Image (cartoon, rainbow, N blue to C red):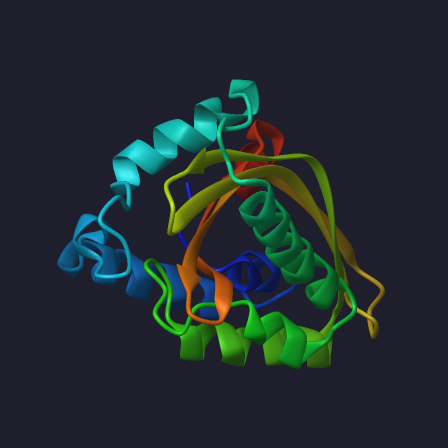
Length: 194
């Protein structure tokens, strides 16, 4: 399971393997030293082990109950902005929905990698089965099945990766922001990487 920004996954798909490996190593080191359960942004951030289990089982989970209608709308809009801005290569809109204090990646790294992706490849995400599986006032977990298709405009090479993703949102003064991304590649994609 990857606990990194989605941009790193896409870089690995199109020739940025060394950068992605470095980012994964950096992320693993951060994860060893920084426990997400101690994240000041939320008292209820799940451990990486718990999140792995949640991602594996999330497809069968039902949408959380008792989400206030206005919060459900705001979380859904934030998730849609996260996907739509990426697909439109709208850097400002994409980064505006990313938390400045994320849990399992660095804001500056996401910023740098997204710029690199937008400058070097054509990438689109499609989403199926999106649902808010956990809501706790200032934290929400959004499950989705995501397919990312990345094409090198120069060489024409196209790579498609798919899997399950839980996107953790934290509510800030300025709205709901992506604070953590947990992506579990489909079994087929995992076999192709080995």
